[in-house]
Image (tube, rainbow, N blue to C red; front, top):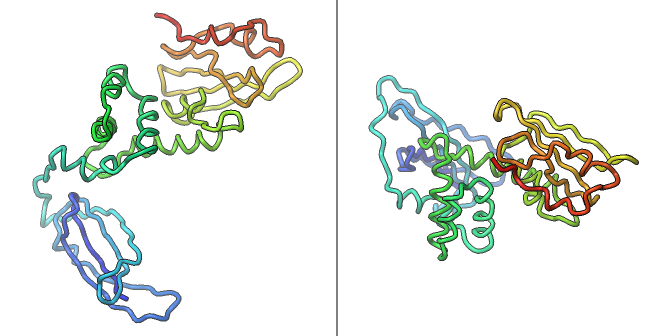
Length: 268
């Protein structure tokens, strides 16, 4: 078999390519290959390694690693800009279809503004939905000069966490729960205090975020005892506000027969 080493620039154009032909039959192989980095300008590059058949026709495995070269002798060239359509075609959204596409659209609503939601509703065909997601996440990318969207990566980590910790037999999609949505919007809390069920109280949790509005609290109560903690009060502007939440929802004997009607954001 053969091992291919390829260096790609920040727009994934080939800069260097070399091959090493290896004999078969070994369980473990270490390969050392020198790359003439001194010939490359300062900038971000990708090293792509592929294991190929001896005739180079079949790819058996691929791995990539990004790296940065600082070369005082060769400063960076002017950035090569791609058109929006070229960026879209090179993105994951251009090949996102079916149920996955619909799920991504639902997830985007967690962060979307009212104006963005209005635009999304007007996207009826598959291509327009894909382009909506492309632009939606591009606007939230904290560093557009890199190929990685850090905000999207963090959002997906929170999605996996919500699915793992906040789902239940009654509510299988943990991200749709109040705790899951809060996690997706604001990330992992600075502090979480959990209270188990007692003879006097129902299970509830207190979440504190230090970096939002000078410090805010979210209170979730599982008043139906179905492992589904509902957001009953928050000190954050625009969220559900009920200072008497403990007496109304957390006490073992619920004085409010229709608690759902009161779980509306405070009008300001």
